Amino acid sequence: MGWFVQLACCFALAWGLWWPRHTPAEAQWPKSGYRARYVFRLPDAVDECSGAVAWTDSSFLTHNDDGPAQLYEVTYNGRLVQTLPVPNAHNQDWEDLARDSAGTLFIADLGNNRNSRRNLAVYQYRPGQPAAARLPVRYADQTAWPPPRPGQNFDCEAVFYRRGHLYAVSKNRGRQTVKVYRLPTMPGDSVAPVVDSARLFYPVTGAAVSPGGGVLALVAYGMVYLYGLDSTERVLRRPLARLRFHKGGQAEAIWWRDSHRLYVANEAQRVFCFERRHGQPIE
Image 1: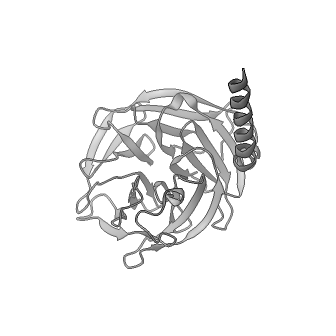
Image 2 (image 1 turned 90 degrees about the vertical axis):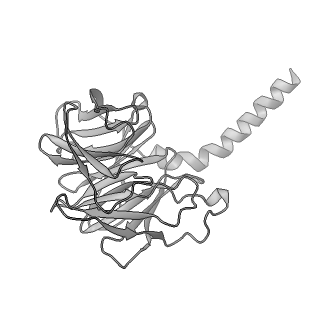
Image 3 (image 1 turned 30 degrees about the vertical axis):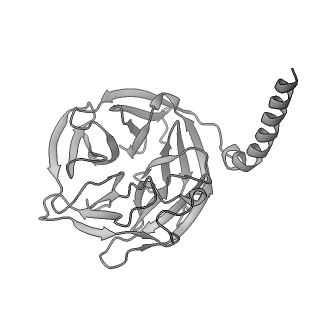
């Protein structure tokens, strides 16, 4: 029994050290009144969905995380409407998709699992244009490629657009700190500064701002986080709800259809819809 007692003591000590560091950010979240339901399967062409954004009242745009540089328009029953090539673009590791109110798309080629990429970029594109504009990205706080392992937190799989700016959210590798970067939206300015940060336990893989601009949604493995937004860039200051989502698998994309419905897709081609239990708007 001696070895068992020693093991139990070691576990208790490890838990005691872990708990204070990781739970304060998680413990502040209110209980949610939301439900998630499976709604449809993505078409075969979208076999590794990594990002999505609302497009029309009845469809959204999505993409795979590698392969051909193209987008897919899909209806809300899973039917493929059209495939949209993105000219002058290369899909090394597309991770997310955002758009502005005029319909300009921002495609985040930011996948960086090893923290060693020096060719990170965002493609700015409006369907029908002859070519996408490539906007290089360099994180202002990265000084080594890759940095030592505890500091390898330069893999951003989530982007969102609000108030004239594009932002990326890190996947919180290393020390479980989520960082928010302001990304370039015009050619020539490639340095992305950190504008906010917070402690979250689950790896963040997608982001989207509600149609009215008042709520930021982040999807993670097993979780969706909702934050209230104000006029500042401190977007992780007002936690609204934390939605447990263990049946979602490896969720990679999140987008708003309207103020009542929030959609999540995983890499197994399954799409889920979040709604409030009593039908009120989420925003």
